[in-house]
Amino acid sequence: MGATSAVGAYGERVAESYLQGLGMTVLARGWRCQIGEIDIVAVDGPCLVVCEVKTRRSTQAGTPFEAVTPAKRARLRRLTAAWLAETGGGYSDVRIDVVAVTIPLRGRPLVEHLPGVV
Image (cartoon, rainbow, N blue to C red; front, side, top):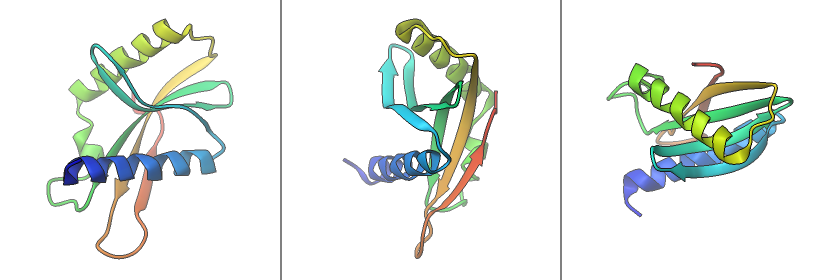
């Protein structure tokens, strides 16, 4: 695993722990289909939450939230539809969240959560 992949995997573990701390139940991590990958699929009460995790070691190339472009949001909508089609759905609500994880040189990672980006 390369350094970038390791940073991303670490960020996903941090995000999963954060979401569980909010009371969400994580159903899947790294779910893949033909059109791409969903980082985390969780349930928040009656709501299905598809979560994009963006991890950065610095904001030199922009903030993690800036990496979720309109094209990425459109892909997340398609991926959400694919997940629901494969699993059968059954949720009263569905939303797409972004969790940004910034890893400082020292100390704990900074986690920011933006619910309902799409």
